[in-house]
Amino acid sequence: MKLYHCRDARSFRALWALEEMQLDYELINMEFPPRATYPGYLDLNPLGTVPTFIDGDVTMTESSGICQYLVDKYGPSPLGIRVDEPGYGEYLNWLYRSDATLTFPQTLVLRYTRLEPEERRIPQVVEDYSIWYLSRLRSVEMALEGKEFLVGDKFTMADIAVHYALFLGRSLGLDERYKPNCQRYLASMMERDGFKRAQAKQL
Image 1: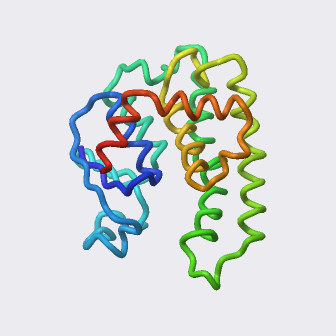
Image 2 (image 1 turned 180 degrees about the vertical axis):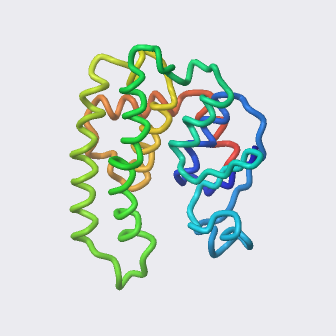
């Protein structure tokens, strides 16, 4: 298996998942944006996005999908919830919500605070999509009431996928507006050995 990765980008979900499952893989660390900095990257992934994950003849580009793939292909693993287990639907919902609902608005905040030239930055877009993200984070705050993990009373790929959104928000300064459960969850997941190993690998 091979993972093309940029530091702290959405590919971190896949990197963390690989470390938690202790699978053998090759990591290619790239500068962002790889479509401009890594020769031939568009041949691997015409979207130009990260991650790109290759496993034999399978190529994947969606970080949460890679997390599900790893559990389904290389499990059984406690990081997954099986179709016949309680919480399976909730588990899948968190996996998909993590990117479509939580990470998406943050990409606009990132773009219009850091990636665009100074003259093209739009503070109103930044504030509007910050509020959008934080309002949708209420679902995470509620789900974590009295709980350490999101679903199944155990650490799963859903935690990796959703926690990354909170972690990205931290890099954007949005964590100052997180509620107590999200603050606690953000800090506790960063203490996991798998998270720390993944952080070290991208250096």
